[in-house]
Length: 244
Length: 83
Ligand SMILES: [Fe+2]
Ligand SMILES: [Fe+2]
Image (cartoon, rainbow over all chains, first blue to last red; front, side, top):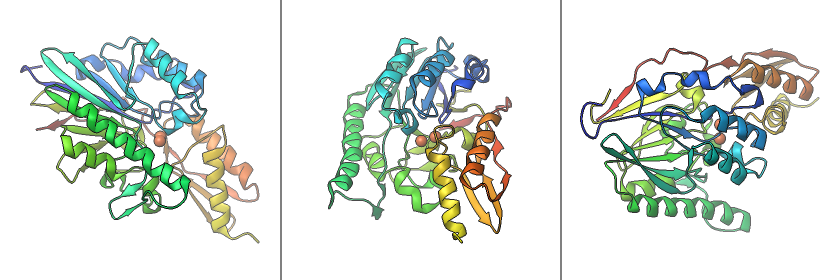
């Protein structure tokens, strides 16, 4: 790091480790400490959200030479064991965000990370609304609840840099490549709106395996889809304030 | 005869819902008696399982598993500077 607030953020999502990844994933992260100061993982850590897979992820991410912050993705919820998986990860020293935030001291700089899984609903003008059947209202209000929690968490964070970590996408630009018919299941503009209201330096997400890496919110915040198939490399590195 | 669109949809649902795969991002196309799988996954085992599950869902079709493997590369490429 060359100045006080320089920061190098490594990020990847959708690593989808199955039990056959045990002992095999970690080598992809070798030398990460030379390239980055922190690793953010944007959910879909497992394939089926089983506890065994959760333990594989915990072991592969355990004691890395840089701090690791993660959120869960929809796959990690598939077996209704999301809380158990999160606690396996926490026992391994991984920070798991669940619609809250954390401040990391990295060198002389403070990095605030806020986030959680996020959820769907679609994008302004083409989205579901809280109307009609209970199932639809529940769907939309789940996203609203999450967006509100992120707003609160962002306001509370005091840091040199603020990054939002999500699984679902806050904007549709980074979904380009996915069929437009499924956009409402890939994210929601309510997430972007919440972050734009308070401000942040960067939003990271995954989930859209066929999407596009780079986008920007209506408020001008950089968005990066770091899903592993989108990146085509073990992780991306984003440098702030002239780091790297 | 079942319309090709329904066959493709059934295969896609199988890839998403079958516990061996649970893969949502695979493109499935049916042309005549040919079944095409396209997309990207992170390891060869998953590609093979996708082929197997697709074949079970539509055994009458000739399968072309064109799924590619990514993320195994150690070449990191360039970092991005955000300023
Ligand atoms: Fe995923
Ligand atoms: Fe996902």
